[in-house]
Image (cartoon, rainbow, N blue to C red; front, side, top):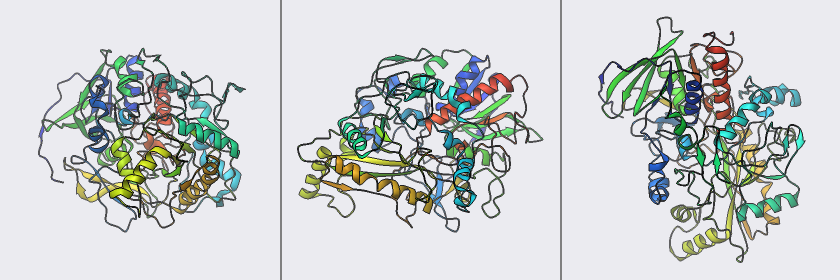
Length: 602
């Protein structure tokens, strides 16, 4: 991509106490917490401002062509993208068209266009390496797999999971609260200190069929925790939500009913009223500036994406809260930390990159059974965790990780229904295609295996030596493909679907799983759940940030987001991102501000 010319300028704004880079969930949480602590906060966002009152205006907000096809809320790849390859010996090429994953752009980030599934991590997720060795022995871990503990426990994070759910207005059903069984929630979920703030969402018809069939087969179905409001709700910040009407316009859209949690609905209306908070939009941060010893961040250098003028801002504390890929890219372009080298496994920035396995299978029902796929909500659904929960014996199956199975009917729109009909080897036009489309839309339902993806020695992020973005910087380069452990896990779990489908009265099924030798294909949407590259841990030799998400190298820099996850898990990442943001903010407020400097000694 051609380099744009831009001119330099000096910032004239008063120096804030804190600079926050990225206006998504993590950035909004950190800004709210630190302004509450009495600090002045300036938040920089490279996209434009978004408000639900404008983006969610009905009926324009539910225009599928603008939303899902033209992707108006997503990253503009013409300005900045990344390159992708499957193996280190290949030449990477630019990701030119949004497909496999969909980073957000603008105020709210991916938190504006997400679906709303709001899970907690388990203790097993947070100490996966230790638990695996304790149960199966060290030799059970493949030689090229980088398993790592987070360095923080579920018990430490539990109050922050609870706080995030109350801010998000999460709808769900607990199984245990303070050790006491209180409802028909997920029997495998870790204990909670309080109930969900709202009752669980109602089941769609397809989800109710899955719930009954899974229970009949012997599994343990539960309602997916959903950041879609099942009732009117006012959160602790005074932000209001309306009840979801199952219109189906969640993922890729700004909810016109204020029913789906987003930074724009649940945090920013309160934050914008605080005089200590300032938001600068269309500010693409090019570099985190460091002092002469490169041990302290002094501010940032950014370019105004409209005027192409360059500016600098200074602050005592810098917090990086962009999308996972952008967090890693900015660390690399700023020269913070040592880039990861897969040859000798030295360095940490870019290490432990991972994605998420997900395959969608389909079940066709009798002609007198209508699945009503136009009805849906992004976070609502029914899942089973029998092959994801810590107690499941993975030894005989020979894999690490796991996967829930769920019916998460989010509402099938007309264009999506037409594009999705048929399939490989099927007619794509004419009478046969139309008949298949109608049958699939009226009488079928999808079941997803939404699983983990581990981290590996030769799966990583670095700077591309050839391609540059519109600002003259090297693009981020992704080296990624599927590995045997994750394929074996996915196939094992998907094969359990047939018994459930039979119990549902399926007339036919199409069970889809990853295949050995199958390379990652960036042309097909999977999830936007990328992670790692700036992971947390207890040693600077294997992690970029410590247990408080503070940089080992630059003590007044904190890096928040799924970039901190050492490997993937079966759940969506947003719940853990939010809990870690509240955890980090709490320790900044209670420890760092009183004694600035490293909070953990290397």
